[in-house]
Length: 284
Ligand SMILES: *[C@@H]1O[C@H](CO)[C@@H](O)[C@H](O)[C@H]1NC(C)=O
Ligand SMILES: CC(=O)N[C@H]1CO[C@H](CO)[C@@H](O)[C@@H]1O
Ligand SMILES: [Zn+2]
Image 1 (cartoon, rainbow, N blue to C red):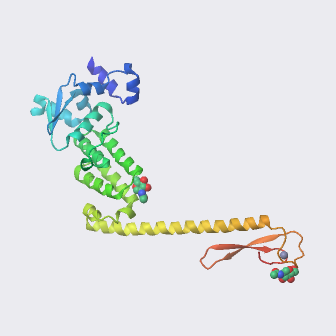
Image 2 (spheres, protein in one colour; image 1 turned 90 degrees about the vertical axis):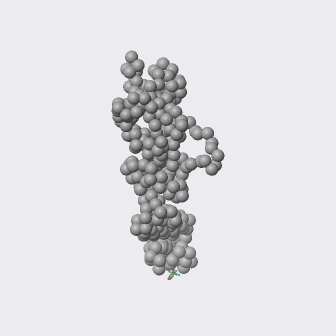
Image 3 (cartoon, rainbow, N blue to C red; image 1 turned 120 degrees about the vertical axis):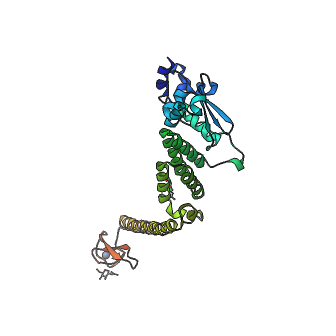
């Protein structure tokens, strides 16, 4: 009976919906909180998590193999995790039961214990990679990308990239970090940690590339302000045409003002415009 309910409830029902529609089915959060019917224990550095084989093994081939093995895990239903910290394991478990982690804001921690949010996501990505929980790896990578999009900071990026290269084998995460680095090259080449992260040769390449990028940006800005200046000059000429009723040359016989716009090239290469009376040719 219970087995039939599991795949249904595993389809990710948004938590808000679960809360307002109590008849939607089994709330896996409650199962996790109470530990009811638990048949699998995960122990991480002294912290115990009461899980259910059917939930853990459906989403992690590594848990499945451990539970089915003749080794200690298979016999005792206890899996030990020592290479990750309990907070990271807690996030993995939360994901297995709810399809997300840290949806509620975390309790504030003392400043010296505070680890950058992006580093925490990298650790989640690493544990997901290790236990083969692909959807969680993807989610953690998304959270890293979103965090840098919301709040770009080169120092945090350096710390996060170092953690990603050292702790996780997930190529998708590495690729995302490389893309973010490429987008922020000019910022990163100024960081002393760059050589530390990518080595001398790559750092040298990035510095040259960053310089080129900065030059391109400067050129584009120059062109943009140039265009703005020309547009402003043109607008002034149009205004002059609209306001002037008579030629300023008192000997000009023309009764009402008619004129031509003439383009003259300035020494800096930007076009400048003048008005010329079409009758007497005097300049305005
Ligand atoms: C003013 O108009 C007269 C008559 O058309 C012309 O001879 C003269 O050159 C004009 N003056 C200027 C400053 O353009
Ligand atoms: C200054 C700059 O280029 N910032 C970019 C760094 O990367 C983030 C995340 O990809 C972008 O959103 C920023 O625009
Ligand atoms: Zn005139």
